[in-house]
Amino acid sequence: MSDGWTTIESDPGVFFQLIREFGVKGVQVDELWSLDSQTLASIKPVYGLIFLFKWVADKDLRPVDNNSVGNVFFAKQVITNACATQAILSVLMNSRSLDLGQELTQFRDFTADFPPDMKGLAISNSESIRQAHNSFARPEPIVPDEREASKDDDAFHFISYVHVNGTLYELDGLKDGPIPLASCSEDEWLEKVVPEIQSRMAKYAEKEVRFNIMAVVGDRLEAAERKAAELQALKKLAEEERLHNNSTSSTSADSNQAACTLLPGGDDEELSNKIMSLDAELAVIGAEVKEERDKRARWANENIRRRHNYVPFLFNMLRLIAEKGQMDKLIERARAQKKQKLAGDGQ
Image (cartoon, rainbow, N blue to C red; front, side):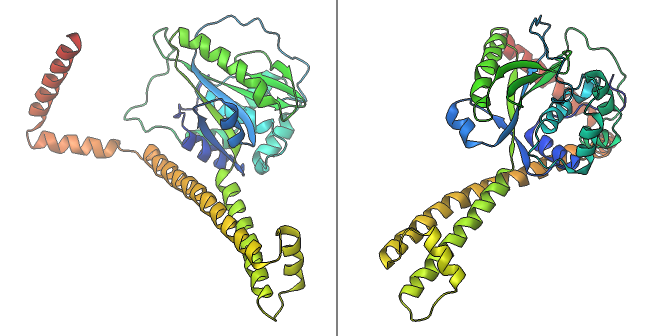
């Protein structure tokens, strides 16, 4: 089933904007290039991991948890083209600490006791989710015919890994239910999930199956800006305290109380050292803020290009080329270049 749902590009910038259009705040999606402990620690909080791979038929005899309907949000995949969106929803819906916004909160509450197949149908019938998903539809010059995938097609699939109520789960919409992988705490689940993903990677690497990993994490720009504001406030207190030490005037009682609580000492040398240390921290966090802002700007520009319909421009450009009598020359040149390339590949 894919009626009314289009294929969208699997990209962190697309997923970030998609999540925003769902109404969810304080979260973004980053692509992971490593699963080492240092990398995972640097991106916390992590609300879930998403594994994308070229699907191949494979027997899976692991048992599913059929008794978790009310505790774990798990939906059967009934929409062919919305696999990525469903994987993201699987992570978002299973996080109780996220601000999902009114739309998704009501949807989660409404479907809480639905069985997996009914949850999947509820997603397929959600107009707001479908509209957000389809806002990234690629413009097509003609509407392609619906057809069944053949064995030669590349069918990509997404599965999610989440921690819910002391258990690490694998959520695969093609299965009948969530697959419990390990009992663990909130602090342990990333450590527990790494061997599971590495095992999949090793298996698919043998078959030359393409894959990648994305993490649904806290909004890193918000966190960096919040940290920068805290450091600026501390620096201001340190500067006020140093000024107070060298002046007969006094700062406010609140400022002095905060300075005594947050700053290490009171003499000029200690305060000057603290200010230098804060400046160094501000330089680091400022670079993080700039990096995240640049990334958001790049995502925004890429999403504009993805959503823009270039077909009329291309059609008119080709029409003008034909009117000027240049089309045949370009076609012959393209054929010659292709022939030359094929000859080079054959050597």
